[in-house]
Amino acid sequence: MPKRSLVSKDLKSKLRALITAQRDATDVPVDIPQMTASGPGMIEEAVELLKEHEGFRPKAYQDGGGKWTIGYGQATPDIRPGMETTKEEALKFARGRLREDSTTFANRGVPLSAGLLSATYNLGQTKARKYGIPQAIKRGDYDEAERILKSLIYAKGELQPGLPRRRVDEVASIRRSKPIPYNVTGTQ
Image 1: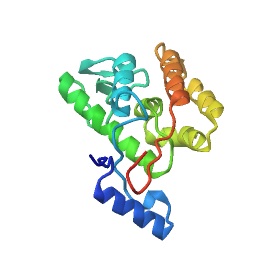
Image 2 (image 1 turned 60 degrees about the vertical axis):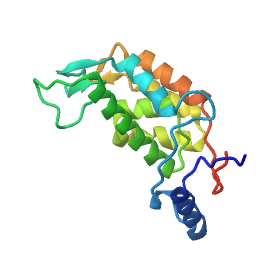
Image 3 (image 1 turned 90 degrees about the horizontal axis):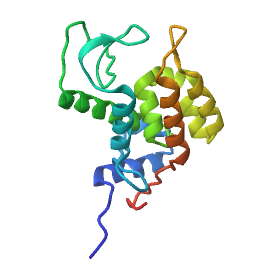
């Protein structure tokens, strides 16, 4: 029985175009499979980190930084006082956001991990890049990524009680992850 390809024909075509054109990977959108080299899907690993460290809150509240937040730490501009959500809605949002972040990083050649996705969900992509977390990981400088993450435990100058433990868990995930290599034939 022939091996089934883990990569769609469309993705193979995009990868071939990328190689042929020798362009930067950010020019070609790529939807990455939800898997790691072993174990459960990376998105689901990140969801578990969110469940553990964000917890679920069905009603909008202000987080330690004063942002209106709901569900599993969803702090988007549309969250308002009095809003409510269900676990199902909150998980749908979290998975969608984690997929978007993973695609963005994959397109930039950043090795993915549930820890990076959890940190980015918490900080936002703009802040994660501003602090240099994905850049350090891309360079393979995990000590620098750890230093940065472990420093990001404050909101408005105040230590946030759950963040030190969350950062330790995120760093552990980043350090044990390995890049997921794909070639145009779809094999790992």
